[in-house]
Image 1 (tube, helix red, strand yellow):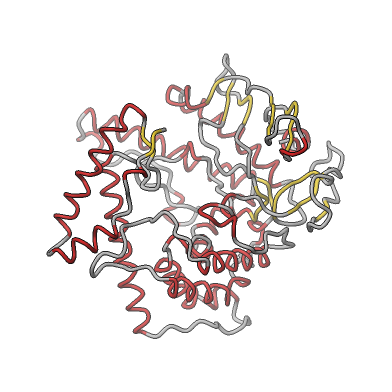
Image 2 (cartoon, helix red, strand yellow; image 1 turned 60 degrees about the vertical axis):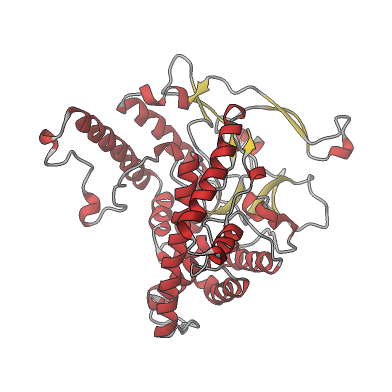
Length: 448
């Protein structure tokens, strides 16, 4: 936060005092004492802001993005004070300042990564290379090796679906290890070569929702503060969540890019006049959301080529492969296998006509099996989505409910489980298998 506030000159709370070592302070715990964020949360005023007001907010966010991408680091990992790490840990010094208006930040270094994705679901217990890394290729290999070691540890993550039912998809350690080994064979070739702007090592806010942005009380189109910077990593831009979360919406998204149909701006449908009044309101709201979504892309393309390049790459099968490989332990091996096959089929596009031969080879039988497993896996995920929808929990991984609703939800969960078993099982043997596959227990419905 010190670097973001005083070097990049992005508005964040001022830090008054802090300690990262509990044993060295009188409090007996790690702590940060910081300035209260001035203004009010954007979430409180966003629904009432008109199009031009929302556009002003977005322009400021894009300006902050420009400061991030104008300040690439010499390595990947996390940011530390130069004197804040043990001397035995590897660090990469920052040799020059990011902006001409500030001195070079000699007090900072790039050190081991503290990205929560390297620590969640027991990943913090895994011995692995946590950086810092000198470049994207080295980082992508470390990402795969880290997940490989996580899978070998046999830890059980929160499931994305209801797996292991009779004749349904059954995740396996063997399958996970196989796809990760194949990923590691090609990981160094996956970063974009033609336009490497998206691989710049940058600091970024990966959770920019409307609750983390504060605006001026009297002028809600002016950003006063951005909060929630913990565990902010320095990663290749292609691995960051680039588009602010407050731009997301339910409904079809505009096509990315500026070729062909992607050049068209969102507009009302041809049958707009035939719609009912309520349908018109819904349609108008959707077009406004689509327009702002596209506006971010257009303005970023004009002012920040790195962001534009990274957004385009993130739509590619290569980037999807990286994303899924990094979370293979969540029973994602069918998705990883599907994208490995796509990478093998598009190998010359990845490495160029003079590049090395593809080390991956999949027979027609393997491809058919992979396609069937992906379909089966998707059906298992749909089962969990249905159950969580019936329960009224939007995120199937999150069993937290309000204290007022706890008893009701707990009873409802038991009833849903019995209905599910009645529906899915054809006999007592299958009922026992589905009961074992059931992902929730009473103690997973937690009070907030």
